[in-house]
Length: 300
Image (cartoon, rainbow, N blue to C red; front, side, top):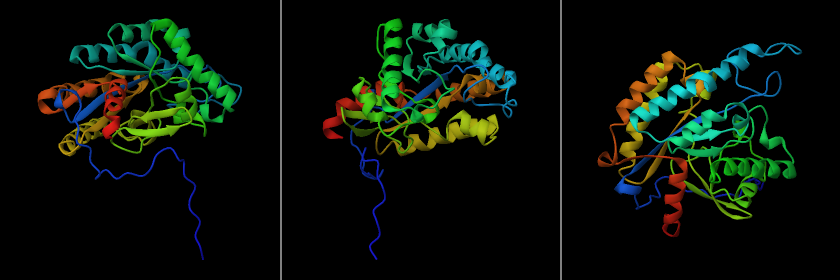
């Protein structure tokens, strides 16, 4: 009996982590670390949305879950901004363009401190992967154009709402001028993806070191989450002595910006922020990672 080959995405080939790279990150560092802060806006009373409680019954506005998420934009994100500023940490700000309709001053504040803005669709109330190709292409180009118009520079990176991709998403992103995406959580280093429009880099974005699946879905405590951050950092720093690696920390301000969680986040980031170039750590953004890996492409 001949067994069939399984369907493959054809975006990249298998490569074991033991096939090591011999270059370094800037400053002769080994571990690139970034904080990805998600700024999201949700439709009131319709569409998808992370919830602190089951959705309200049909026909009833879901005030509880909407207001809980809105806390992130009104309070939590501003506290995160102050924390990053105090620790001199850059941030990759992953933003719905609907934030520009709802609370543009929030995104402006992160841009003012020099953070990278990463496109995150228009709203997390919808799934990109369920769109037909024409509509998805329009979404991608509209988000890119909207951010470029406001900030004078087009975003280089994309994270789909809900990590939702269609078969054509990488092709459409590369075709619209994006350099990288964050949807694939399959490696601890950047991977070149094949598309109809050339190379699109996949920059590691965590699903374990991510407060939504960890805290909201799996009900892990903040104490456990900060232990995860420490252990991930220490282990990857040790592993990176043999090859350059990437560590991302994915945060959502309605969760991590709650005062009791923010206090513990401040403690762990203060501890880790002491590690800089002299210790082999490059605090950076996904866009800077993509820029550097592009320079290494001939030897990658």
